[in-house]
Each structure stands twice: as C-alpha cells, then as structure tokens.
Length: 150
Image 1 (spheres, helix red, strand yellow):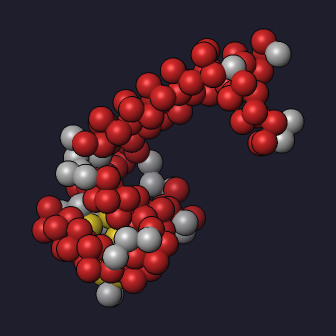
Image 2 (cartoon, rainbow, N blue to C red; image 1 turned 30 degrees about the horizontal axis):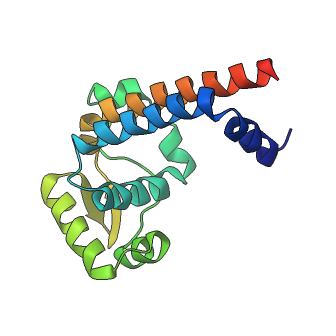
C-alpha cells in the first residue's frame, strides 16, 4: 500500500484515528513549549539539528553516552542563518535573532562559521526527544490497528 492510500485510510476512519493522532501532536508541542518560547524557535533549532543529523557520524552518538557526559562535541553537518531562513521560510533577521538567543542559552554553537546543536541542548531536550518517540509509537499503534481492521 502506498502512502496516499495509507493517508486515505486514516482520514476515512477519522473518528477513531484523528483524536489519538491529534492528541500526540499536542503532547509533543506541549513538551516543546517547556524548552522553546515559540514555534519559530523550535523550527530554527530543528533545522540546525536536521542538518547535523544528516551526517552519518551524528547517528553513531549513543543516547547513553550523551546523557552520561561522555560526548564533548556533537559531530555532524553544520548550517547557517541564510540556509535556515530559506529552508524554513522565516525572515533572515528573525532567524538571526533566534540563533543569537539560542547561542546565548547554550542550545546552539558556532564552529567555523557554521551552527551546530550543543551537547547541553541535547541533554536538556532529552525529555522532548522521548516524548517524540513515545508519540510516534502511539501513532504507529493507531496506524497498525487501522491496517488490521480493514
């Protein structure tokens, strides 16, 4: 079954699929609000994180080592304000201000003119990461249940 068919199946059974999926999206957003003052802050951080994760070395960092403080600096690809602004469609000056605030908070760092998430940010954001995984698993259960019932 292709993605379009999966989406149609979920939409057609909205009374059973919609509420739990929306509840999980809300759970993630509420957890994100504990760390980011607005959606643009989180969007900018996610753009930096996504770029860092695109390098294979980032995936080799274990959660245990990260939380235990065994990682001094996160590997991965860096990005810049212009790239974030273009990819996220947020004005460059807004991105610049958001980045400056996150650098001051210790969530982002500059290395060689590029932006990277910090180890401290990843440690602080671990509850958000775990909420994302828990929500993804619950959504997967909704999808799986819908598949089995059709």
